[in-house]
Image 1 (cartoon, each protein chain N blue to C red):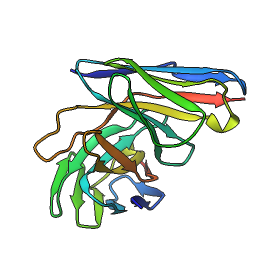
Image 2: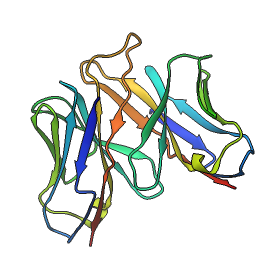
Image 3: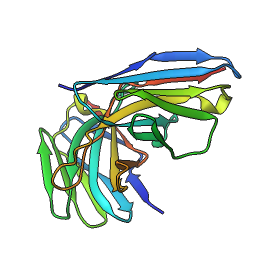
Image 4: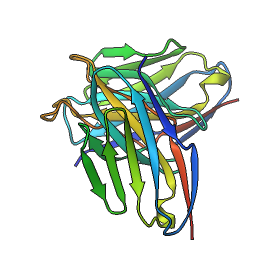
Length: 113
Length: 117
């Protein structure tokens, strides 16, 4: 069964305290791994797509990496505005039916000033 | 640029009442469309997806249904709501044209918060 697991469920950091979020997955036919940011009461906002092991993507204080079984979202010197829930999803391609995303439960990040 | 609209933003409905949530996409043609539900403190669960007008695939058996009467319109419905239907409903779209690696990110609307009382 395709499965995506994120850890920790919640993470509290002080401003400037770097850390990492984990996303592990077991899927057949992985087509891509996605990271999203979700603010309270809003829809998820797309951050990154990773395609293959060893790939890295960066955006401001965020860097996403991918191995064969997991992905990490590294947050360097976070600021309070980075507080949000970060969702990981893997895309399984269904022939002629589009790509379905399977989501993890998310990591709720809180950055205190 | 592409935009996705969902309405209403919030909805409170009694048990047994009907439901209709609407989603429209602008700025793209032939999108794949999706309905997800997010329960409090949980991840997103795929409910329905559509690759074209009138083509609906259901992921989870339930008392909800979806329809796609136009290329860029996706509707989520129920004839009689249950308490368990409460949640945050998200519509999303992705491009039909895959990139060279076969991937196409999903882009979400801002959701509808449904409370069934």
